[in-house]
Image (spheres, rainbow, N blue to C red):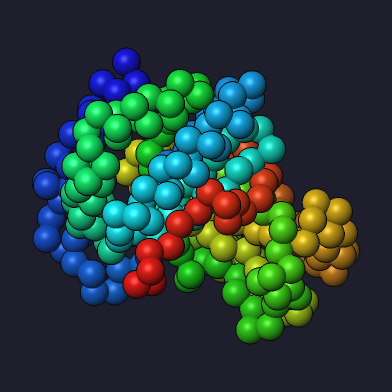
Length: 260
């Protein structure tokens, strides 16, 4: 059943991309696009799953898979596997790259490894996400250096239909307020695309650890004071549902081509 669903997904993505207007596929002035595989894993099979992923990555390295693959694991057994796309048209190159890996590994070997991965999965979902720097807070000087980051949060927010413009305007208010209070921790905003239940956005943040992140958040809200409380109330009126995930980057389950 999972194999059949993956084929349906591939067909749906390819079909949707094929009917997009030329303007949508133009790379000019397009914000960065990412394809995220969201894999929910049976916790009792975590070790088997990670072993299979590492074997797959070894094959990607051997056979020269051309896409960067960044993996995060959440505290509730999700694995987010993220690929940077060269626009929506990049999905076609992504499909072709996996087809080539299958042939280079040998279809039977590839299928056997895929079945090992699928056996540990409860669910898999592929979604496109668009990075929105225009509604993200990106201070010139951050509190943490990249090597200090060890903890990540994702706040997924689903809006009432038609509230996207208001939500994006509120994000710009958060940017202005954060800058005015000299905040040093960024928030990155991504907008859900094909494969998500739209309208949806996610705020992506990080810290050294869960304790460090909580302490930084407390100081942030103290600094914002009544202005922050009022803006938070305004923001909540636009949100129908919110879900928070926490987790870590997994360099051992990630991959970068030699040419990158």
